[in-house]
Image 1: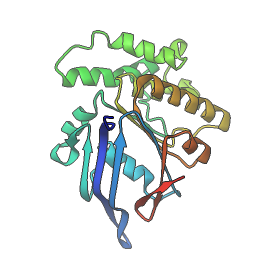
Image 2: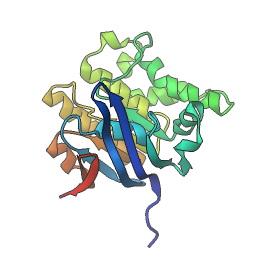
Image 3: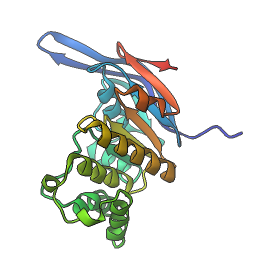
Image 4: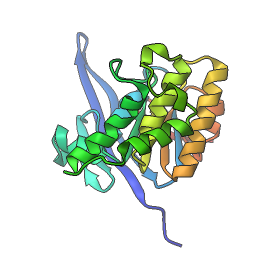
Length: 233
């Protein structure tokens, strides 16, 4: 039986920051492999480094030491533009704070990564509007396509963010406390949607959460403690 493809690998990953009290170690020599199609939950106390780890794995931040390979490419060999090009179409990210551009409509927010991918590949985004419209339809927001983020509820904004993340057909999706700013009922609907779309797309999901019930829905759980990851039952 062929082993599953490794989409993301961290080796000896470390992150240090310097503050008024001196150097603070957030992650120390951490190793991790994420396989194609799996759902992985990363749990731990607030401030334990979970979000920092997610940013490093997705190439949104740079490590102090060690290496991250994402979709077969070592991130430390790329500049910022190169990391953005690598993420385009292959990596999605859903944030706790939605991160929608306030001056763009729901449709335009979903269109953005599709247009950026087309531009980086030197091609035209002729079918981008159709893809974005389908993505909004799948999250139940076709009727809100022309609305701006300020005209949408928190749950609707997160559904737009999920549509934006899935529209380019990513191979791996990082989600950082995607229900953290939502009430319990809305959060439950968002998680059902996220897992449904992830299953349809066959994408790997790496989820940071404080919610043990949410973590239990994942194939594998890792706990963050003192800058290290430990397997959880």
